[in-house]
Amino acid sequence: MGIGEHPEADRFDGDERAVQQQHLRAAALDAIRAELDALELDKTPVYTMSASFAAPTAIDAFDRCASLMPTIERLPDLDVPRLKRIVTYANALLYCNARVNAYQETEDELSDVVEAAREMRGMLLDATAVPLRKKKLLASVVDELRKKNTTAELVDVLGSLYELLSPFVGSYIEQSDLDQASKLVDALAAKSKAKNRQDVTYSSLVDQRRKVGALLAAAYKDLRAAVAFIRREQEDQDDFAPAIRGGGRPAKQAKAEEPAKPEEPKEPSKPADPEKPRSLTRGLVDEPSDDPFDQGESK
Image (cartoon, rainbow, N blue to C red):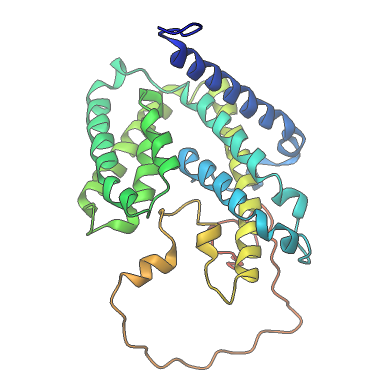
């Protein structure tokens, strides 16, 4: 053993990194508390994303969009300051999600469901091997999911793997397996809610995660809309900012693997109303999808 070496040095380094990461994420939440306080819960979209998938994907996308940022900043009607807080929102969401997971039921109370969920987790992780080798999934996202193995994290991990593998149904995964994973997620979540529905602390943590998720979704929607406009000729929006509620391969690659279909004649579209220009920005209330120009219905 060399001078200064310690047999558990790697473990200590890992623990230190984990602590630093936790501090970073807690600080991110503190940084946006004023925004969270300003949000009305009943006007905030229901939380439907998976933090383990959405947050790392958003952080990676923001980094890849760095070269486009000078152009994005010049676009009109865009909340650039909010867009630039994407990494902060993502880290805050990871922190909130971890706190929610800490209130989940113990393994003893869910032994049968947990055992089935663990088996499904292993099978879905195995199914990512080929897409990873072909670089159709982000290795960093899958690696993060592999680290999450506690009972409290099973819902988030299975939900993330479901979204990651959905585009590969029929190739590397069967729909029946994903359906079973979805049922296990529902079973775990239902049992957890049954136990914690009277817990005021738990409810407040869930509400907090919902608000942070809404902020991330709104800011990331702006980023995707801006990238879609800037890269409209190249049509490679998903190479820069893939959807945070969908699978892991870019749309162009997915289309390239499918046989070409003959085009059907289309009726000419009606011209847009000049008095209603299309805006790149949206509020927090109507954020149903990751489509950058999905205007939805006002509520």
